Image (cartoon, rainbow, N blue to C red; front, side, top):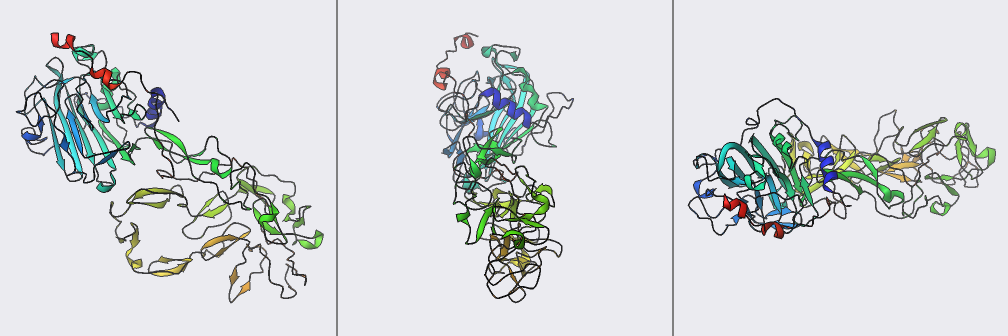
Length: 592
């Protein structure tokens, strides 16, 4: 999918938590300090010498010469994973950005994306630190410590040596909420003072006009980037007055970089969607973050044909073939049920159809829309009226493992999101603390202290130190969808549950099995059997009506999950590359 910059900006604007606070642009969120040096933003050897269009070159006494790559492995031992590249050094550039493949002296910000230079830019514009009062003011310093990098542009002026308006901002990279050895990291832009947008050589006058600052992320491949919507506009000053953090202080902007891509800051994730050019269950998707917007990610891959009301092999046809069921059964709207034989074949209140299926008489002429079934003559949700075994959730009328088919990254685990009942990838407990009363296990999961060391048989789970049957439900609840039985913690189509010493249930109101019973003689309850070995009731309490077409999209999927493939934020490449920008002559600038 290709998105242009206008579409990206619109998606980001929808994600904003705009905090319109009437405060001066010079007073927003405080910057982090206490890192030593004259200004508190970094030791003297970690500060950039006063310059225009330079980069860190070895300390404040260095001359404008060869930029020095700054090692970052103290903070990130395995480097940073940023849009397909793994970087162990960075360049701190005077003009409000850091880069990874080399220094960038370009002073007029180009619209993202540009070529061959991955960049994180809290304020890419024409910074000039030759005026003012360095080293306590108008200086650029960095600080590197385990799990964190802080780069500060402290009350910097603009070209040509102007210091009447100042910008005070900071870039913070941290692995505090992820594992440092995954390459994932969090990003903060912090803005304390926003007073100018443009240098004189970028068309500006008195710090305004011309080509204002660019803020965001660029992969350096002319495709992937994230740009704040007010970039290169006069309204870029609003970064001091706004935030993308719910309840955050004005001037605070946070992002996440996971799997090499910017993922934080978007809205609309978790909403069901239809995957373009896919059919059947393969068309079911979920919106996931892609830069500042979302993209529809496929959650189901083609599988074996099953009688479950879905197009499982994604060939465009719902699997309703009777050959998918056992002998003397018929596939009826998503379930294998016993063939009935005329008026003698169904329980009271049910009718045998021409297809050989027993349905509720009240449902004979009821056709339900996609995602619903008929019960008592009314259409109800496919997930209504039953519970799923412990650890499973309902998806499209079936009980499934919410993490099935989800592949997470290194040092991540999949867990069910209790707010949406869908699986999501989260940092393993080695990367985030467990809640009180829980202990981190080697598999990355937090386990209640009472269950540490407790191993339960298949189909059971530990609850307060005791193994419990995953099929347990309350006395007034039904386990599994109609036509399925809970066996060994799984809802199994066509199975017969065995309870209390091996006696199959005979309560027609609560039966969930549809498989053939053994031919042991005459049944004396309402589900009459003859000696032919053919069960004469369908064993269904809802008539078996489940109308689901091959483009049904139930609201179940995963947020932040990584399945096969990569969700990348695509944009139209610009014809002007970085090389062309770097060749721009600065005669006008130097003439001043």
